[in-house]
Length: 303
Image (cartoon, rainbow, N blue to C red):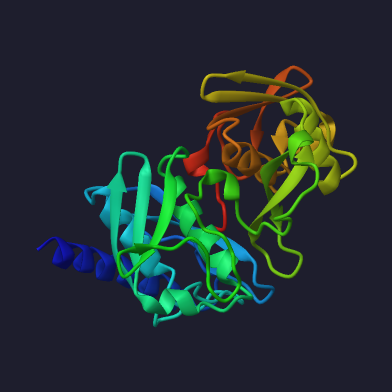
């Protein structure tokens, strides 16, 4: 009965996606499933032509338990939604046979086809699955099983996959380092140079305070952008920015601020944001509010 409920939920959500995409052929596709549980937003990944993971946000049935939620999201990463150059992350032959939560360890069971993943992108698959799971709790550890046997490495690439966690990141192109003791891995949100969507990259930065880190990534985006001060109050982060962010009076350019807000969220540096410029609270273009909640941000959601 549990599997039947999961399948029905999956088919219902898939219908919503297909209807949304097919019914608006002349508009940009929406990277989002439409349901009534607007607060229960979750993330999956697809892969672009450069073999980069691209996050897609959707809404999921809130009544499912965690194991079923994870299993369903893995199923969705096998679907081709025909948006831009994005392709399914997982081949059809790979099947998730079950998910177990053992305290803070999440055990994911696959069929033997999992061991045949191409060595050119098996890291991306592992990154995506770990990221999808740790979005529910950043303290989770993830283990992979085939035929009830824990897998310590991928056979074709020798990629180690032992108790992976949030720190693995996604699109991590720097796996081996000589400066681990003086650097830290951060997930950075940037707009794709080839397409009109955001991509998450994991990069290593010198250990520094939050303000220095923010200005470093802003400088990579645009030399004119600057954050003058950051005030983190529990779950709310107040950013004091310079005028280069403005698109008009008291309105911040959404394309300049969105990557920063996503980056802060991914690195657990805020969930609700307020923006100050010249000691005045300002709004973000297209949002119409002074308080930006992460669940309202349009990450890979196109109108």
